[in-house]
Length: 260
Image (cartoon, rainbow, N blue to C red):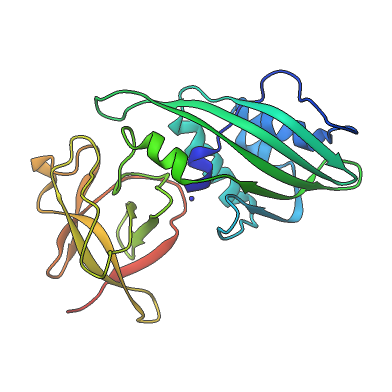
C-alpha cells in the first residue's frame, strides 16, 4: 500500500479552474483527506471504481483497502497539504495539477522529512459530479522516495517504499516491508532507525509453491532490540527470526518460508 503513504493530501484555498466547474466529489476528495476522515473519503467512490495511484500500479477496487491505505498515510504525516495549481474539467472528467508539501516525523530520532513535489491527478465522476468512478495519479515516485529516506527506510512498517511489498507470513501476526533481492543475493543496506538486524535475502513460497526471493531483516531475539520499533518474530527453519511490525493494513503478499 506505498501510494497512500505519500498521498495524504490537504486541500488549501480555492482551486483555480482553467474552464468549467469542478465536480463536488473532486473537491471533497482533497477536503476529506485533509480532515483525515477516511471513511467518508472512501464513500466518495461509486462502485465499481478503480484507483490507480501511481499510474502503473495495481488498481484498487474495494473500499476496505482504500480506507486502510488512507489511514496508513494519515498516520504517517504530522502536517499534510496540497496546493492545486490548475484544474481542467471536461464533462465527467477533470485533471488536477497539484503541489504536495507535507511533513513526516522521524520515527526514532533524526530529523523530520518534508515532501515537496508536483504531479497530476485525473478523475472521472458520475454525471452529477457527486461520486468518483476512477482516479489515476501521475508523478515521479522516486522524488518522494528520496525525500522520505531520512524518516523511512527499507524493512520498516507500512507504508512501504515504492520498491517494496508489504509481506505477511502465514500463521504469524505482523507484517514487514521487503524489497526484492537484487540479482537474487544483494539487499539494500539502509535499515530503520534503532535497528541493528542484518538485511538478508530470504526464500519465500506462496500458497501454490511458487518461490520468491525478498530481503528481510534477519534477527535472533526481540529482547536484544535488534528490530528497533519492530519485534523479532521466530519464523523457523534456517532463517530464525525476521523483524516485523504490528499493523491492521492488508499486506500485499502472503508467504511462508520455503523449505531448504
